[in-house]
Every structure is written in C-alpha cells, then in structure tokens.
Length: 275
Image 1: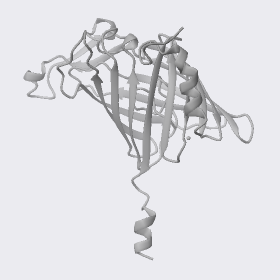
Image 2 (image 1 turned 180 degrees about the horizontal axis):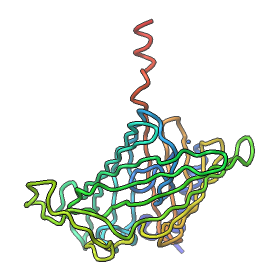
Image 3 (image 1 turned 120 degrees about the vertical axis):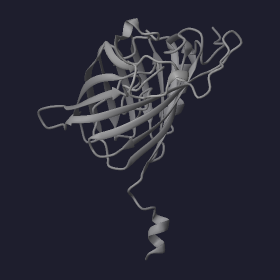
C-alpha cells in the first residue's frame, strides 16, 4: 500500500524516519518543551543556565485545540534558573488547511513552571512538580502533574530511565476574554478539565514511560500518556542538537527537535580574546 500523506497517516514511513534519525547518531523534550519523552514529562534534574529552543509537530488526529481538524506545531523555549527550577514558554500554532482555515495570530501562549522537589538517590527516584501558569486565559496545552523518575545502569554504555506520574483533572485559570484582559489578577476559576472548552485529556490521570539509552546519545522510548501508547526514538547527532520521531497510538507520526546552550559558559572564542 502506498502512503499518500506522511503527516496524516504516515505509518509505513515511520521505520524509515526512525532509521534516518537513529543512524545519524543526549535530555530531549516532550511535546510542550519540558524535559520528557514524547508527550509525558520526566523528573530529570536541570543544569544551571541551561537554555533550550525547539519545535514539535503534532498530527490533527491527536490535536489539542481542534482535534481532528488541524495539525499543530509547538514552538518552545526553556530556561533552567537553577538545578531545581525551570521556566518553559510554549506557543501552540494551528496549521491551516483547505477544510479548516486559521485566523489566530500567535496561537496559544503558555508558561509552565517546573520544580524538582527531590533529587534522585540510590534508593529513591527524583520527583518533580510541573504547573501551567494560573494566569492562563485560553490555552489547550496544559500541564499540572507530579512525576517521579529513576535511572538504572544496565552496562557501561546502556541505561534505563523509568518515569511514573499523575496529572490533575482540575486546574485554575482565568475565565475572561482576551479583550477584557485588563487585570491579570481577576477572573480566576477552578474547573475540571473535562468541563473546559479544550477537553483533550492531555496528561490527565496516570502516565508513565521508559527510555532505553545508549551512551546518552540515542534512545528508544515507550510511554503511556494517560490516553494512548506511544513509541519513539531520539538522537543527538551533535552535542547541542536533539532530533526525535514518534508513532502515536500506532497510527500517527509526530516529530520535532531542539537546540540547547549554556548561558553560563563563556564561548571559547571569547575566552581566547582574554588569553
């Protein structure tokens, strides 16, 4: 059978996509830009001054804003304030098509805050709390979770990362219109996510996943994102660049990439000027 649409159906192309990515070949980002697997986040520790910028494509069948109507693209930036605290900003942009046009400007804008409650030890996992900003007005990519992550060394080169978490079915947001947004401290509302205008079920309930890593430069991922099972692969063909591809629920392709730098490390070219 010939696949006519890589981004729509795309199943028969996935092995080639993963082979292309894997054979060009260290933490990767999930859909929203958090440290994680495919859709789920993890509790891996941050590095001071760590800055990431990236992009993810999400197919319309599992779209968060207009499910089944528009493919989505997520642009994100992530900054580690300390080893425990991270701030993530993402923009979810719908992709227009002939049947469903788009009039939105920037699309969804969301700020997430991630705090590492406990660091990993020989016995206990690392634990992180991730919360989307309560100042949200109109956003579909929401994260309100607690997650634990534990690593196991299988050999000198191979390791296994395991994560387990739970996403809250409730959240706080601002129930106001954009044109009425005159006071960011007004209009707060506590609501069940299933009653929210974007009832997409993203990270609501129990989730978990595993990441089998080889020398921390290539990994095979499998996860349950609270709604469906996903598998994927990521690589770091260069020190700062991460590429990844995934198969969602066995029938849709998702892919993305990110680039990281350290804002605290002085570039070698500048160091040489002071020698």
